[in-house]
Length: 226
Length: 226
DNA sequence: ACCACCCCTCAGCAAATTTTAAGCTTGGAA
DNA sequence: TTCCAAGCTTAAAATTTGCTGAGGGGTGGT
Image 1 (cartoon, rainbow over the protein chains, first blue to last red):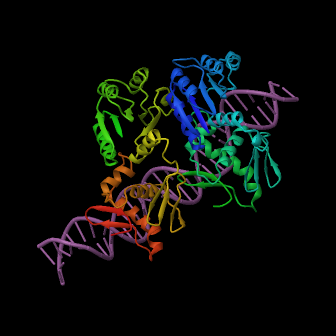
Image 2 (image 1 turned 30 degrees about the horizontal axis):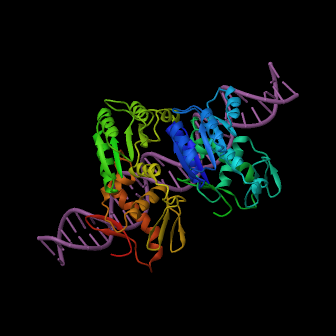
Image 3 (image 1 turned 120 degrees about the vertical axis):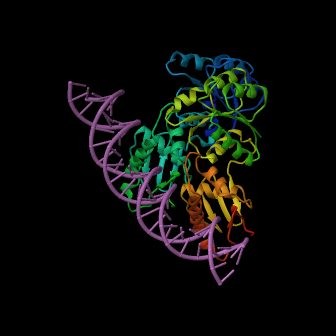
């Protein structure tokens, strides 16, 4: 799947790019509106992530022009916090969804999946690792049939782990995906949340294989085997 | 690949330069902001390594001016520990990535590769020497199919050796790449770690060719022959 | 206002890793 | 063969990393 990111803040653009590439998506980046527009009209993308405030060409104008040319590539608009009025304008201009900055990377990923979800896979959004299940639509989590209630941060963390089963995720990666890029989270916070998750997922099932594993010096991973 | 290093501390600048050149990269060095900026705008680089605190021109201003000129060369910003402690500021500076000093050289190298990785290149990087494999993404190490667990320093050292198979690496080189430039590590520490690695990689496979070799007076190398 | 819950930080402990130090081995020159 | 420097090994010391309980501050419901 091909994604175009149009964003002038390099750090954000780059972190989105890195994150999406980790998800095996092909990402192109443009740092201003005109470059982005040229790319969008000459290449075929499955989705476009577009900053609303851009040098060169504004997000709204970008969208409008693209739609006039009958290009209906789904667009996710990024808008700065506090500009609630933008919502209307963003959607009016023809964007399909919008996201308020600063956002956690996983949020972007979720909306991106929502927009590009092919009809077939619409229904089943249930992640499964061993006897642990997580439904990204209903926010239901259960282990061995027993329902588990999580706070939203716990849920986001577990979802991130479960989307990468068996893979070691460093605390830095976790912070970048589960928290928004402006929050200054200490690594210890991740440890604390891992502790919360263990308390709800592993501790009540002492007879079953533990699912959350620490790999000292590297990070955490979820999975039934070692 | 061409790299520009803008750093006023000669010791750091030179150690980066030496290290990068060993990686077959073409490196230019500037010791102050204005010189660096002139070079950056007149030459084509693949990536710029930029100290945040500079005589002549600050890193943030440097970046801003370059971006205004539509120069989107990826920039890695070096920031002193505690100087920011803040991803927000790193982000505002307009750089693509940043690295907190003091860092181990291999860390810089990894980020540099991440920023310049051409689309074609595979994301899944597995280094292989004889029947020993090391995956830099999943951190898995195995010999003859049997998985081996390493501490992070052991892993970093082995990765460095395996990135230069058959090549003799002196203890000094190893110290410069695997440890950060501020740590005053005794050569003996390297010997100790080589010992640890042998214990995990060569000792359990006495029937197979030993992979870690000492070249007395020169250093170490990894490889199946001699 | 009060309570319940959630997010995050902090401090203290335990355990693993990293580094140093000291004595021992080995290779090779004389 | 002897000797010395380079390298190896082991264990103790120093440091780092991860886990946990406690608690402050914020938010939303009653």
